[in-house]
Image (cartoon, rainbow, N blue to C red; front, side, top):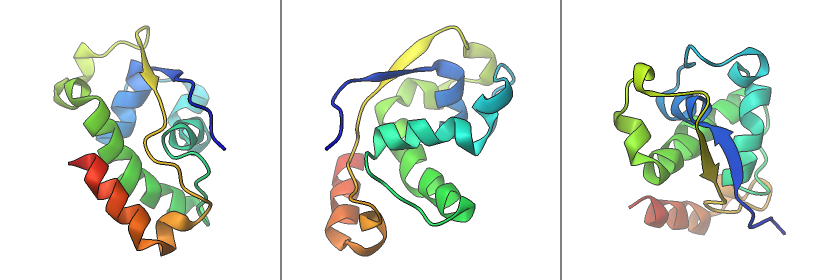
Length: 116
């Protein structure tokens, strides 16, 4: 089961996840895969991936579109308009039972519906 509590992330990290590039204000672990793993887990509770390549694919195919849907204002902002000091709340977008995202067509269909 997953938590329905909303986690807070700094705006620069969410902007970076959406745009696929590190915001200049991010520091240390925030720029690494380890820094993004909690964000992905928050969006897709229970999701698993096989490798670093699998994580990158989850970011590109699921996390970026989900965050873009949740935060359309951040999609349009430039790096200069983003602050590391502001936080945004992130909550579950679509739970995944382990590798369900890879082998369950209904999961992908539900994702597509949520992204519309």
